[in-house]
Image 1 (cartoon, helix red, strand yellow):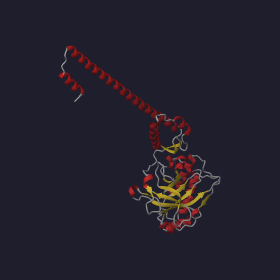
Image 2: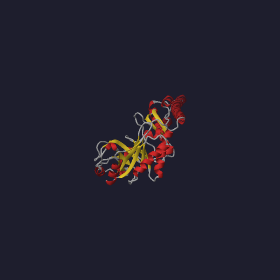
Image 3: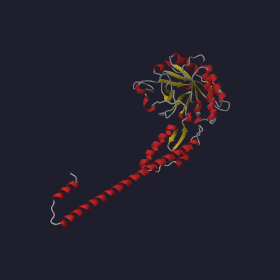
Image 4: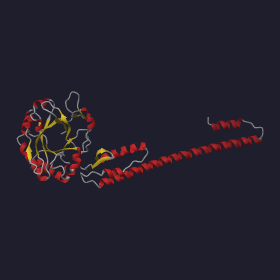
Amino acid sequence: MKKEEIQDQMSDSMEYDTPEMQQAYEEGRHAGYLDEHRLRLKEHRVFRKRQLKLLALSGFLAVVCIVLTVLLVHEIRKNEIKGNPVDVETLAGKIKFDAPTDMTDLVRENYVAYLKKAYVLFGTYPDCSYFKVVSGVKRDDYDFENDFYTKEGKAYMNYYPDGKKAGRVAIDVSEYQETIDWAQVKASGVEIAIIRAGFRGYGEEGKIKKDAYFDANMKGATEAGLEVGTYFFTEAVNYDEGVEEANLVLKMVKPYKVKQPIIIDTEKIEAEGVRANNISVADRTEALRGFCETIEKAGYTPMIYASTYWFVSALDLSVLGKYEFWLAAYDTPQFPYHVEGWQYASDGTVPGITGNVDLNVWLR
């Protein structure tokens, strides 16, 4: 029963000696109602003030997010030429998170997640470089963290979406591995061999040289029942040199049944006299385009090998994105584009090969 109902019943049953006592009771009762009403009004005002403060804080944080986004987009649009990352010091000086501590972490986490949808980040935010994801280049939905692993009883990593094998084991070799027992390699579970055809030397002249073990490896791997492809380490600095490298490889592979791609290997090399390290993105892109177009016209599948950073910083993928990619990444890849091969280790061991060898999951 409510308080008011109890009071009404009490007032109905009570008898007062005089009208004055009755009047005094009624006045006291009315005063009590007024005090309770005032108390409720006060509590309502406090509650409304708290609501308004929370609303103001939410509005402030929303404005902060909008301003940060506008600042970032403005800075990045000034640096969208491929190979020219956004100036980190400029961004770090402008983008600050001055919200309360618990909100700062949440805003930062959401903001970085947004950035990764549109940019490839190198480093930890905000001390990182930003490269715009190129539109129109095919994406893959690989879960590198969970679907790539070495199954119990197996020697090599592979791709297992939904627990079912969907990739193949590949190695890439050159004269550095010297003589290889390909029968042992095959028996260990390797299915594909990518064999170096040759390389262009350093220095201004940039002479092309054939890999000393190319023919032995091509014959040995093919006879052992492996599918073969081949790669060429490029130091080409223009379109014509890329064509020259491709034509040499095409002559070398004529005697062999090449089922896998013919690949151009582009890297930054830390050595003196390297001729292609400091050429422009446009020149390097043209060199690779010359190679890939020549391979494609000859009826083979061209492919590009590079690291994550080299792909996004040193190549114009709006031009080269239509070709197949072979990615070198020795940690879990953070790569937004399609991948047909993933080189996950450079220090692998394979029966029949002396020393270390590169290991790959092949996705084609």
